[in-house]
Length: 446
Image 1: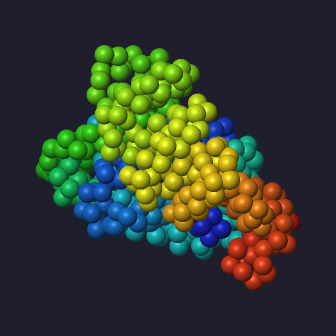
Image 2: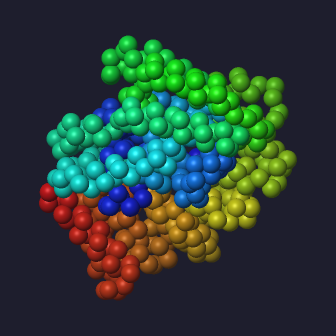
């Protein structure tokens, strides 16, 4: 499990930058939690919802924001974000699915498409300011982000974040319809609104982020209760309950205190509890106990790629590099198209640091990059692999792309200029480097 910042098409999707500012405050710059097991669980839980909404599940990513506040939002028609705090707060699968159904409704009903059109029609100066603010926040400079955003966008930016009450009512009704079609119990939608009961009387600053961006009124709560009474939906399946427990258990094991986790799994020997215990021991740190616990689980679940991936992470971070390669290798064998697993495999191979392992690392990391090009940690490792292979032009290009992804355009420009001088002029790689260089120069001059 890792925290990174995801930015697909950073230079062209202004809306993504705008939406990220709604959750990255000057006091807390959030990143994205990337974990193959959590992402698989969320995919399983949202798939029937998206299908019921007429949306393609393979075209929409569900990503977890590393933020303890309660919020969820959409940035464009391809991404739904949920805060780690809200995911941990959910009491069961149907509550989480109700949040995802509501956000899916904003996509299906065209609310986000209209906002993208509004973003494109905004002034170039304001759009650039918002983009720079997101870049500053992405690189951890939250104070700079707040200042840039305030100066560039002002009230127009703030009004962009919040859904209107009409949009909320529409998304509520549509979300319930999707849950019914998917056979999901709809009571979860009422339960989620009840979490925020009484927030209307609080000042705007004290309200939960979810209520600030999703206006909550008593009329809306009454209407939701009426929708649910007339449309109770089905029963939570064992599969949905399992994937919810797996996602929440993995996330809590990495984010809550180790003593908190170990108290809750004491005396339990189910697979999810054993996984949580292994993570807690790893974070304590107690490498010997962590490795023995995760190895026990891997032996009992030999065909579970997520267990082997976690075992690889624990071994790698415990500096048992050859064993980590074997564990990641088994995970990749079971899930050959998973970019995060391929990236972990490449990282472990780089740690072994032999001519053969470095060659295999470059292959694995290149394959991972074709499946997910917006992972800064992957790009860092890929740059190292290129350098070890003597491909200095590609190493500089990959490093430039990583800095651009993080919004560090001064560094991006330095490495892009180096790549332009090393790569064959006119090649695809050279053009990528030149694009970054030109963009960095414009931003740095501004």
